[in-house]
Amino acid sequence: MAKPIVAVAVVLALAVAGVGLWAFQPWKIFTSSEVDEPLPSVAVGRSSPGPSGTPTPGQTTPPADTAPVALGQGEFVDAEHDTSGLALVLELSDGSRFLRLENLASSDGPDLHVWITDQPSGGDWGSYDDGDYLRLGKLKATHGNQNYEIPADADLAGFTSVVIWCDRFNVAFGTAPIALG
Image (cartoon, rainbow, N blue to C red; front, side):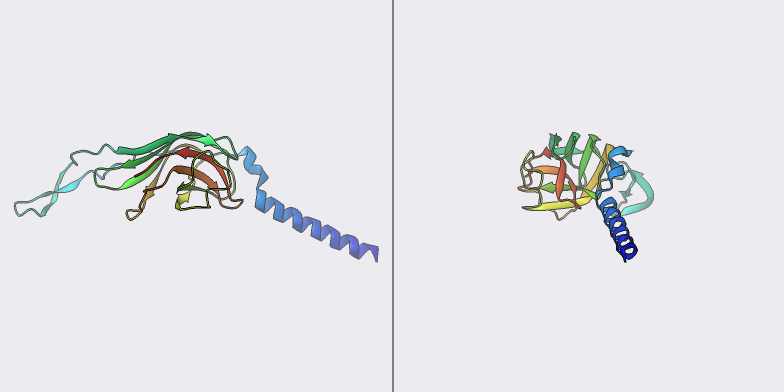
């Protein structure tokens, strides 16, 4: 009778260990990734207008001004994990907007995402999903320079911070203050 109980206990212990490994992914303490994306820019090579004002196929002119304009920026501060770097909200000459993370350095973790929120930077590391937030996508890498397109219809008024957010555990890894509109 003792052998079946021991076998069940071993199976349960392995199941709990497996779930724990899946949830916490402890090996990520030792991993990191890097990306180096260039600044976002307006596509070069728009068609030149013909005599009627319509584009003439095959003829292109570079856009007048492709340098992005910073709408806001802030330095990352630590939350649940050490995080540093600069967050910039950029607007291109065509009106498109991007969040750019420069010189980002953070820890790896399960299910990391990039958000812009209405919660103040440096607050309680679990509070960033309490108010309004805009999800921009999965974190591309723990280190480097990366761009996230902001949807054209997104109203940025009232947003105050950028957050590296762990969806699995509902905690901020790091935040950057950034006042917008």
